[in-house]
Image (cartoon, rainbow, N blue to C red):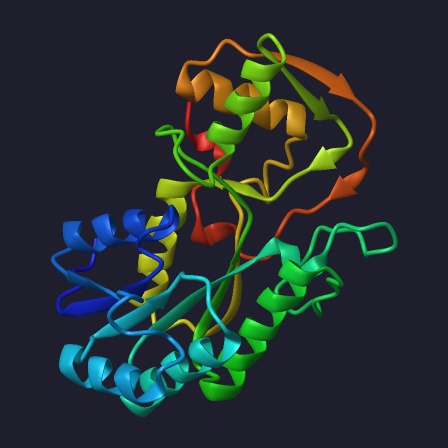
Length: 255
């Protein structure tokens, strides 16, 4: 494991994935500074510039929600100072509404989302690319973590099971993009130290190609839940993010 010395700026530390990235950076010798929106509003350009000048980060991980202009400014700072810059995007840029293309999706595929969230993430991607072509745009899928807290597949499946007598309904026609949050964090930190650039896909189900019922059973086994999986055929969709299977540990590697 390569060391990650220096101070790294992270946005989104009140979320779910960013704290895992912070922990990984600390393991590798790095220091972490978060962007406190209450102290430095993202839309206050002058305050943001002063904050960046004070922190003088060795790299930036942009995992927080915010206007695409903020993402572009952070990327431009990284460009001007020749720093690693990693921004997380989402499989949602491809949409999942009727009429949207089916996957699996590759890094070079053009975003097709028409909904608000997917379109927003696509705009953030574009803002980053325009500001810093050497940045890493890492698309990720549904994240799972045993702590079952926050925006987390485990929490959402547990809530469904709790409301349905221990049953989780899952479509056998859906092959989701999904990863364990800890593995995503490791991959994001690895990318920052790799010299890699451009769009990458981080999906632990890319090669395994498990259906959603298989994913639910896997998550239940790993986290110790005794869910009953009720399979159905109400959704036919392959949303896997393929093309970079070597960048993240597959679901099948964890038992």
